[in-house]
Image 1 (cartoon, rainbow, N blue to C red):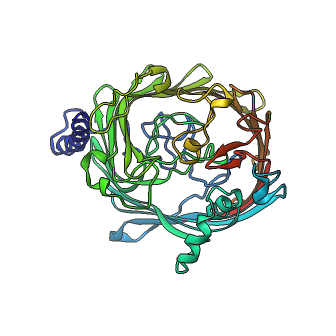
Image 2 (image 1 turned 135 degrees about the vertical axis):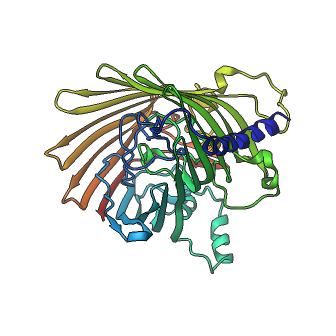
Length: 487
């Protein structure tokens, strides 16, 4: 009963936004904050009322592999008179990857290097038919080969159990190498005190850089996706209502589960399997603070159907002097499926997932970020590691505590150099990620990233783990090179 009540409450939030816009606003003509329905847009930041993937940074949607965030494409607008302003922009990138060392199961692919190439076209368009409406579209095309192709990667590690070869043989009409899809397609309706977005919307909640505990509408990314600034579109309707005293109420109702499962199931017709989120935001001193609730729906790890979770969330970002600070957390209530699950005692320590970080610009223009991440249900003993939740997208890692550090500097306006490390604080293993990006011109850039893991043979980053009868090494030494043309 409880999940039905809160789901109905989320729908009422959207209805409240419609009612608020229909009334005469008593608060003046200039709304604060300049609200967005929840998706990061180019040039927006968390401080100015719109979600950015990291505090203080503009959401640039570059799509470059991290580290090495090159300046993204800049839209140029054409005015078609009564049809409104229209712009078309994007990028084309070719990325080559090479992984070294064994995958964990020598019987599958041995100790040879594994290579892959991906060609990615991201085409973006904006159309403003009038001052209150913005229509945005992002189409992506990919050609993937080798380890850059998820099917080939699963086959090479043996995780598919030999099933993918049979699936492809049984579906010769399908293309398992080329992908063309619409990632984002949304309309934003901008009024005095209310903003709406509808369609495939980028919902980018959270203030963390490497980890985002409050972002529960998209699959969890891998190691090379840390700092990725393009948020995957989610079928949803969002609303944001500006309140007095520099506050706002924001919310969304989504129409697909967090893992964006492609297959249909009978349970999706039930309204309590609809994901939603709502939060109250306010400016407190020099900090932007938000508290809220999220109803997460994800595909079940066993069998069909969905797993549902209700989270209490909180996030903040701001600065004290020259020191930038950010934090976010979610506290998960006992898992419920129509009614609370009392089969085991609820442990708030295991139910809490949080991250806290600081950012500082050192002399010499060296930008530093340090972040701590705690995954309450993670293991502190290597004997308790479980790789299955990581592979299924239900966990960020196998351990409980992680640390992340990133140092960046730009030389001569066209060379970005970065050094980063992700460390498992429980077993001492980790991965270093040095990288560089060179801007050949305003439209052309090349970048290179190296992944160097370390740790003992039973550690998360240095060893291998058993799952589904296969031994898999989660992180392998790798080199990634990319050439990118923005337009």
